[in-house]
Length: 76
Image (cartoon, rainbow, N blue to C red):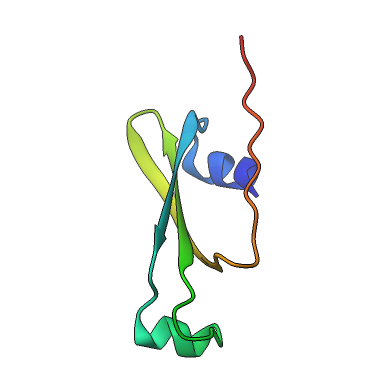
């Protein structure tokens, strides 16, 4: 998918920034996700860049009581 995006843009993708935020859901989010009252959510936003230019933004919303996030970070 990202290869196709880079080809469509005619420039390589250079990186991404992800932000994880734990918060209480809005009433609409509570209904949409069928959450019990008082259940927090985790909002994950990813911005993919080509150079300094953001080219894709993705937003996910997770039930915080049912997900674990594990990241592997390479060290040069």
